[in-house]
Image 1 (tube, helix red, strand yellow):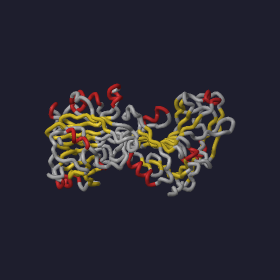
Image 2 (cartoon, rainbow, N blue to C red):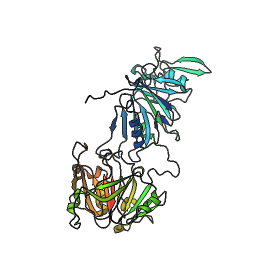
Image 3 (tube, rainbow, N blue to C red):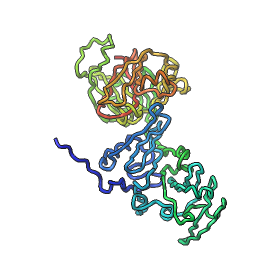
Image 4 (cartoon, rainbow, N blue to C red):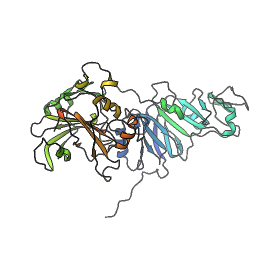
Length: 466
C-alpha cells in the first residue's frame, strides 16, 4: 500500500503560523489554566499544524519541574504545573518562527520583526522594565505579557541592575518622540531602550504570556517561576478532592457524593452521572496468584468497568453481583502507558489502621496518602509489603518500561522504576496506580479498561480482594 504523504498547513513551511495573542489569557487555541489533556486534544485536532511535538518532564522527580509541551517548528512551548497539570505559562522562545496577531496587527515571524519599536508602537506605553545584568536581557512588562530583549555587550555598561536602562532612550508623547543620549549615565530621564547609539533597535528574543490576576512580573530566568495557573472557578470539579477510606468508600468533596464498595450501577449513575465509557474487563493474568479464586480462566470475564475519564476514575463491577468491587484512581504522571487518558485524580487515602477518617480532621502529612506522597512515606504509613510484582507490556506498546506493583491489605500501588525506588526512594513520587479493596489482601493483578490510550505515569486503584 502506498503511504499517504503528510500535508503541512499553508504557511507553515518555515514554522510561521499565525496565532491570536491574548495577553493574560493565552495564544491561539491554548488558554492559561487549561489541563494538559485539553492541550493534547487541541494538538490532535490540528495534526497538519502541530505535527512535531515534544513532551518534556523530569523523569526522576516529575513533581519537581514543569511538564512542557514544546513545538520546535513554531518556536513556542507550554508549561504546565507538575502537580495540578494546568497551563501556567506560555513562552515564545523563537519569535521569528511564530507570527502573533494582536488587535488585527501582526508581529513576529520571519517577515515582521518584533523590535522594541514595533512592540512599543503596538502595545503602547508602559512602566520601565527590568534589566538582568547577568543575562544581558531587558524585559518589558504589560498586564499578563512580557517581552525580553537582548542588550549587546558594548552597551551593558550603560545599564543599571534593576529598573530601567541608560543608553539611548526615546520618550513618546502623543505621537512625538524626543531622543536623549546619555553616554555613561546610570540614571536617565527615560528608561526604555528604544534605540541604541548606532541607530539599531533591540529585537525580542522571548515573549511570555501569564495570568494577569496577580501583580507578578514574569520574564526570563527565575522570573518564570512566578507564573501561576489562574484560579479555578467556584464549583469546578477539576482536581476535586476525592477522599478514600480503605475498605469502605469514596467521598467527593465538592459534590458531596458517597460511593461505597458494593454500590450498584444505579447508585453510581445517581451520584456521578453517566460514565464516559463502559468496557468489559479482560481476564486478569495475575489472578493465578490468588489461590482463593477457583473460577476457570477465559479470555473475557463478566466484570465490567465504568470509565470517568474527566474525573480520573474507573469503577469495576462484579459481573455476577453487579456490585462495585474496585476503584481505579489515576495520577496521570508522564512516563506511564496511560498518560493523557485520564485527568489527574486528586485523591487522599485514609486508613482505619491509623485512625484516619475523612469525616474528621487528621494530619495529612502523617496519616494520608496523596498523588504527591513519596514512596518512602507510603512505607512509613503502611509498612513494608515485601517484593513487588513486575508489570510490563513490552517496548512496542509501552516505551516507558516496566512498572512495579506492591500489594497491601485493601490496597495495591503501581510505582515506576524499581531501581529508583531502591536507590533513591526519597526523590520519587509514589505511584502509577493503586488498588484499594475491602476485607482482604489485594494482589497486584489488575488492568485498566482503556488500553488504547497513551498516558505516562500515574494511576491509582481501589478495589475489593479478588
